[in-house]
Length: 255
Image (cartoon, rainbow, N blue to C red):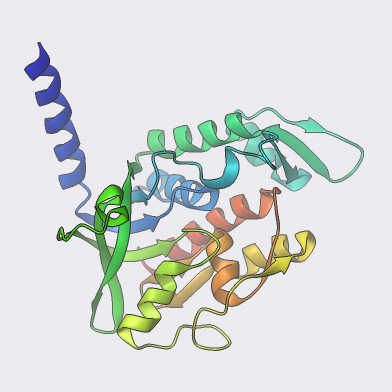
């Protein structure tokens, strides 16, 4: 029995991984914008996989605000919440609240059931760069990189890559530095995130979502970090809209 259990796990995982070696879109980070984008692309019939550095897809949603596991979203997001089966509470203002655990679980479920693959515990340590465009990602086990072990990675070809990896935009910064290229930002490089200003941060998250180099897109907090905009805190409507916009642009421009 024990060897049968192990054999089934190994075979199934390797099938999933082998099926993700050539993608239409490789998404770096399973936060809300990455999950939403993956779901939209998969529902459109595209081959998409998310590579998440930690064990827990969902990004910063799980903890809510300072471990108060409630989050805030704009009322304009309620059609999306209802379509996803996410319950929410409305007030007299333009904001609604939702349970962060329910939101994270629903976003993961929707992405996976649309056909997106999620590989957790896997870090994108670099990109494939060919003919002046980003053409895939370089992956390794997160613990291998955390321990600085000299273990070579695997490579995944992709028609485009979405950096949805959070505040620092580390992958985008690595592309600019290692490839010696100018990004499609005001300074030509990763500009760095500004302090919190919730309203401006929400607007900028959506406005900043898009292509920053041939084959490379940014969404969510990575978009604000790359383009030098404010952070927004525990309000997540902009992240959902950012993921939807990223998917729409990728479908129009790449796949």
